[in-house]
Image (cartoon, rainbow, N blue to C red):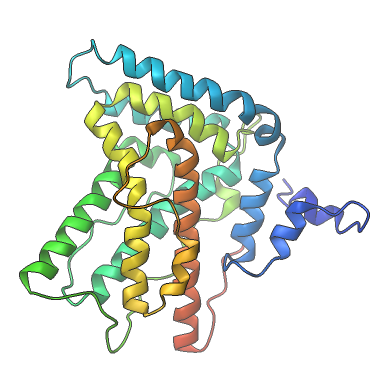
Length: 298
């Protein structure tokens, strides 16, 4: 099936310029063309245009109602394994190939970014990479493990720095060996008759389910993990000695947790921040080695 976005096939009409084509051609952000094309194809889909405006308020109302219901449920109410089975089922059958591809890439990119910081830190630490290759891999509590990984990483890194009385600073030689394009071709993503749901709509739908089937502690930790985008960006900027790049890693202040009502929207920003930071690291890796690594054909 042809996965070329409609705005690229149509081309430029000066009397009716496409905002999606403008965003795709714009070079102010470092996203590679294949990622930007998938992101904008998903963003310009009919699902996002017509379905998301109805889903978002309903999802946020559901979050409020579930919070009320959970005041009378046992504190340790949790069905994480069931949650991940439902997520895997929904992603396999209803979510678009582009959205599934971007979600799966996120685990790989996040693991590489944490590995980069851990390796180049003045006090190196080990990481726990998560690298799913199929939707069924999510069944192993992968989304919850992703949130736990982020907090464990920040705690271990800063404990190591404090124990050795060290501060983050650029090393003499940056190690980019872990930064690479994930081996995840777009054409291997689920692409059945009903795989139409865009990334933002699917996240808005799944967020109340996430809240319902996890403990309050697990759900709040997942929401608060989004505050770490700037934290991870600051670590990378300190190692790269390039603070101006932080403008592309933005999900509000790390010390100001926000309401869970906007968790779906902020989760999209979280994914885009990871793509931006990984793209910047890839550019700096290529500049160090003098030759870019070609992106795999999707």
